[in-house]
Length: 207
Image 1 (cartoon, helix red, strand yellow):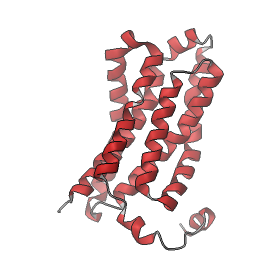
Image 2: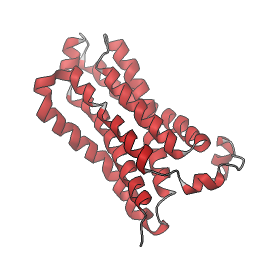
Image 3: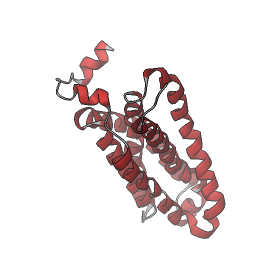
């Protein structure tokens, strides 16, 4: 099986996009106690931020999925990574628990878009025979993100504190430069971009 440089870059971008998405999500679960103390909130209320994040993911999947169908996989993936990176960093500036919950809900929308857009770009670009292997590889990105988050907390949390740990969540934005320079648009999307697009309900009925 022969791979082009662009195909390899797409897989790297999709894997890192999902890994760093998970990294940003899991950072917070290590910091409940200190967030609770500084924002004068119960642990139950702080942990509800995770519920909000996960609950908003389906909205993000629909929103960014429609953007990817209309504007292309590559630019939408760029917007998506920037969105979850900025919202992760904004979490560190939250002045109150209410504001933190709002930011984490918005983060959930951005987080929900990454998997669908990144995997679509990868699957539509790589050789068909590699789709099974690559789909498994991309799924490994989620536990990889958890591992990186736990490593970051181990190395930096005592020195930085919870607010600056959220600043580390802006690191995924650097991936945007790699995507813009090294990743090509999905060939499948390029072929279909001039064709009429069915509505969401029509796709659900058909599929």
